[in-house]
Length: 116
Length: 116
Image (cartoon, rainbow over all chains, first blue to last red; front, side, top):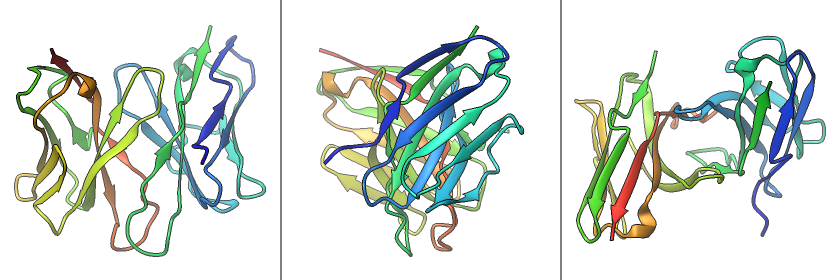
């Protein structure tokens, strides 16, 4: 079946603008994660959804970042008043999140955000 | 504060030889460890994992070793193949047995180049 998809693949914006990044998880996966990967770094956790609710948003860097998952499937990461430091690849992952044990996270290809 | 560290940014190995990638961690609450492989312009793909109750896990050419007392794990690839050339990320998760968020903490990655 289809994997995790993310749109757009690339986004160039100007400092101060608002952007939305979309993630379509694997069908049936209840857990959804957003990560951010800056140049030369590993992915950094931003937020985790279990169903429609944000179960852990401890990784969001500040209140300019917000994410939603209104129907428990597609998620949108929203960044207000973008800054040059927000430039990174934003990765989305999903997993089955069964009751016990670890559930493998499947990653999408990412959205490369460039803030000029 | 880098909780998961990969101190070798790159590694070059001849085809057919063994590749050894290393990873150190500082957080004693980590109880599940994973290796992801990443090609350019793609998301990370899961390779192999190990829980803290084990010290070795093997899957074909890939073996992960965990030394809890040293807070160290390694990935062995043998024999190495040119198609293994990619960036390898070590990742760790806490609360595997508690069923928490399973968010992953990644290292900075090691670029493996397997020379034909």
